Structures are given as C-alpha cells and as structure tokens.
Length: 161
Image (cartoon, rainbow, N blue to C red; front, side):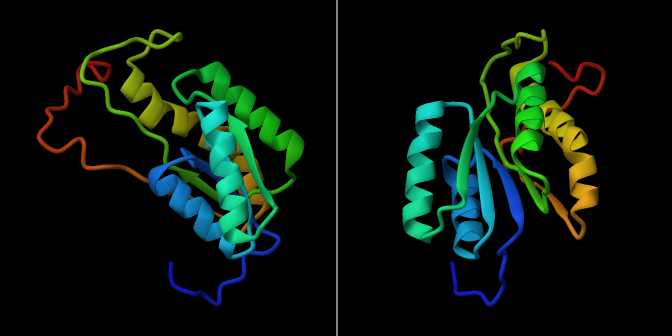
C-alpha cells in the first residue's frame, strides 16, 4: 500500500474475513492509517494469528479480533451484539468474507451455505449495525465479491440451488 495522507485515527472499521486475503490486506491498510480495526474470522486461531500480524506490521495496537460464522444467523446476531457492546461507533463496514462450495450443503438454519455466507450473513450483519453506521456518519458500507460467479447459471426460482 502506498503512503497515504489519510488519517483514520478515531474511526472504527469492521472487516469480515479479515484474517486472510483481501480482507486481511484491507484491515492492515486501515490499521496503518490509524483506524481501530476489528477483524472477523470463522476460526479463532486464524483470527488471533492475523490479529498479531496486523498489529505488528501496522504498529497499531487498536486492532481486535472477533469470531463469527456468517453462514449462521445466530452467530451473526451474536457478532453484532458483541460488537455493539464493545464499540460505540462504526464508520466502515467491509463485507468481505466469502466461500465457494462445489456442492450444496445446508447450514444450521437450513439455507444453502454459499448463499447464506456470501449474501444473507452480510445482509443481516449490515442491517443489525445500520443504526451504528448512521450515528457514526460519515460512514461507509463496502461489499466485496469475487469472480467465482462467472460461468455459473443463476436460478432465480430457487436461490438456494
């Protein structure tokens, strides 16, 4: 990341999938700009490892890790509840976490896992944190995606296909 004159000190950012890939790079970049960054990971150990790396590389101790499985609506609700208990503001929500499964697997909620994780989990999380985002304005919601959908057929009659 190039040097930036942007100062994110005092701003709080939540990044799903912040333990690897684009999410981790975004979290590191925001931490380098002085933001308080909360990374969300499905795996506690991977989240803690990323947390320590981001803190070291950014020289920013205001980096936290939370655990949530975005395919589970109860887990998303718990994440939003825990986030609101710890933080009083949210300027940036980056919905980044995603998976691609080659076959249909149902979640604990009976939903198709890829659809639940990549779409419904982020939709629910955004809605649960919307009041905090509005109260922290100016704020941003950033939704990331991949090219995994290219070459795929979408059945709008069965979104869980």
